Each structure stands twice: as structure tokens, then as C-alpha cells.
Length: 419
Image 1 (cartoon, rainbow, N blue to C red):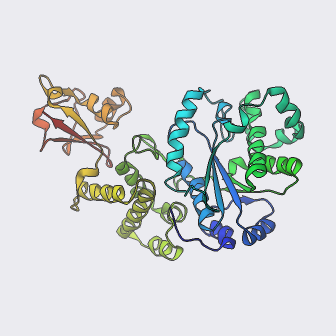
Image 2 (cartoon, helix red, strand yellow):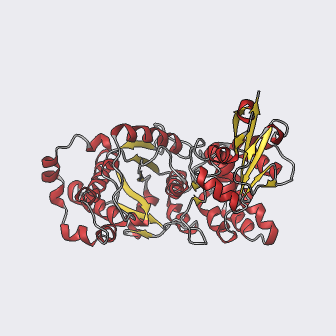
Image 3 (cartoon, helix red, strand yellow):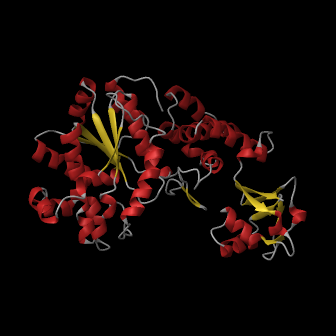
């Protein structure tokens, strides 16, 4: 998202206007610092999968706005802390990952962040770092002596992220996470002049601990800013659908399905999401948000196009938009609809079980779920409702080389038959 720089001092006002602002440490002094100089700020991303998801997009956009206002963003891929697991907002211990899995996940995340943040050698170009570089070589006793002595158990127990987990049981390894994240902030301040950490509001305790450690060890003031935790108007977790998470990796969530997620958001979320997930000027956001009735679809399509283009590029956004138009009778090109290839031999003989095709296409998580969807009347083949769980797909179902599958009202897949 390379854009002209905006006034440095406008960063905090813009964050408030667009809905990113929840809490801030010493806001007045931070505002003065942001106006006086280019400030380096960071956000950490947990590599628990090889892709980020929509839930990560608010912090990503936080880095985008930081850079747009002439400040320097740092993205931390938590290769070191991932070996421990962040207890913030969790009720149970995370599964431990191998170093190989963590490295694979880091590669995917780095590529996705590069879609939004400009990395390079300029004064406001972003940095992408892995905290394993400064964590993994510590010996346990040395870390306790040099870093652990700065932390009070009483203070750590008062942090909300710790208190919530204590209700369900918390392992010692998780209890150390706050110290590790605080150490990240101190190292970034020492080595890169980082003065600001941002993150979701569940990170407040960890951020404050990092500010305190930076003050103790580096003798420098640092600051924290948190974003509200985003849920939809219906109270659902952001980015969750019947099919699972909405991923930023096109291999996990196709550009078409990504586009459709935004088209189908609740009407009450449109203005808020336009503010948070796009860079449209606020005057345009307000005009789109003022649309009523059927016209609100225009605002949703604009939201979907802007977010899809930012992640996957304008060509993919245009293709997804055309595919949606083709499906819903407004012309367009169906090329962007999620599809898969099948040899014609799969349909020979008795045919291909529809339950297999639905599971393979990702329209159902399993054959069992596929049967349930059929029983509930939620499956259509070539726009015809299917009620027979034993339904087989045969050559008779092929239309111009394609079998069109649909689950529910909004999830589509084309099986392209070859041979």
C-alpha cells in the first residue's frame, strides 16, 4: 500500500476517527513525540499457522496507517514466543509447535505482510523481524538473572491476561510469555529506536510490562496503543464463517470467497469496516455508509473490492467481482469462482458420490457434514435442490464442461470435468 505521506501529527487523530483507538499510555506525550519526529512502532504476529486471517487485519492496518503518516513500522513474526504460546484471550494451553512448523508458518506470514507494508532501506520503510533471533540463544539461568529480576510476581498476577487464564489453569511456560514479549519491546527499543508498541486490547498487560522493562533497562520512555477487539454486529468473532476462518492466503481462502465474505457482512458493520479495513477518505466512507435499503449492496461491494485489491491485487478483485456478478445474474465472468478439476473417468460407472465432491471442494468439512447439509436442503447441483444423500454425479450433470455446486445461499464451487 504505497501512498503519499500524511502529516505525522495526524496519526493519533486518524486512529481515533477510524475506530482503531482503545487505550493509550501517556497520550499527550506520545502525541507530542509523533508530531516532532518519525517514530518507530511495532506489532507482533503469532505464527500459529502458515497464514494470517481476517482477525489479523486490524493490527496490519495499524501498521499501514503508521507508515502513511511518516513513521516506521516493524512487524515481529514471533518465531521465539511461538515456542511458548501467548495466553492472552485464551482459556487453554496452545499446542506446541516444532521449529520446522514455525519456520514454514513464518514464510507465509512474511509474504502476506509485504502486501500491505513497504519494506526497504528508507527512513519510513518497514522492518520485518523474527524474535527468535534474540530469544533462542539465551540460557535459562542467564535470562532469569538478567531479565527476570526486573519483574514482580504480584504485578504479573494482576495482569488481566494472566487472571483470565488462572481461572482455567495456567502452565509455567505460559506465565513466562509476558516476560518474553516485554523483552521484545526492550530489544527493539535498544537496537532500532522503537518507542511504540501496538496491539489488540488483550495485549495491554504485556505492552505495559514492555514499557516498564524498557524504562528500567534502557532508561528511555516508551508508549503503548491498543485497538478494540473486533466482533461483528451479531457478536460473532471476526472472520469466522460456517466454513471456518477467512484466511489471507489464496490457497486457503480463494479471492472469490474472500470477496464474498465482505459482500455478505451485516448492514450494521459496513461503516465500521470501511473505516477499519480500507483507506478510503472519510468523506467517501460517510457517503457509502449513508446508503439505505438495497443500495447498501453498493457500499458492501466497494468494501469487498477495496480489501480484496489490497491483499490480492486489483486484477483478482476485479475477477472476483465479475464472478459474483455472473452468479447473481448481473453478467460478468465466472472465471473467479472457486473451482477444481476432475477427470471424466471419476464420473464413469455409478458416478462420483456427491458427498465426496462436496468435501473435496471445501463446501463441507467432511462427508458426514455433506450428508447433513443435503438432509437440511442446503445443497444444489446446477441450481437444482438435492435431497438424496446417495446422489451420484454422472456425465449427465456436466454443463459446458462444468458441474456447479452450491452450499447454502452464498458458497459456490465449479467442478471442471476434463477428458
